[in-house]
Amino acid sequence: MPADRVMVDANLAIKWIVSETGSDKAKTMRREWIQNGVLLLAPDLILLEIANALWKKVERGMIKRDAPVFSVPIEKLVPLDLVSSRGLVPPAQKISLDFHLSVYDAIYVAAAIKYQCPLFTADQKLMDKIPPGEVEIKILENIE
View (cartoon, helix red, strand yellow):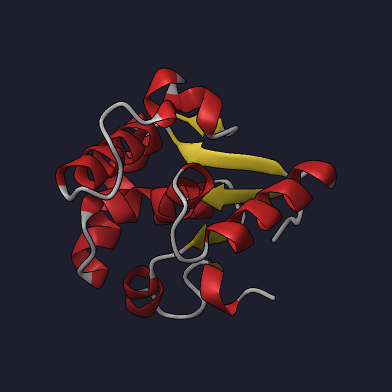
């Protein structure tokens, strides 16, 4: 698979915005990718997922509603090239049913397959559900 592009999911991208376990590593990876000219891809759905994750963090008291993160558009916080989810829904539905994933998670898998690049995530459950050979999935905690 080409090393010139990667697919990023919301579980990884949120770590670029909010300090939590794995944030330093995720930020280092992002910095290295950008320095090396790697194209960072994600389905456009990622913006909604990040907004929802931020809402959850406010609801759980993990961040404040007036945190600086809310003064900047999400698109500026996560420097990604967004790809349309529209054509990814049919393959994502199949992946979802075949591997018992949410359609939201399956969209990232379908996108990685379509764009022939590895999927980077911080979601071990996602990685565990997709058998080797379907798509290359890299989990944050296993990346050196």
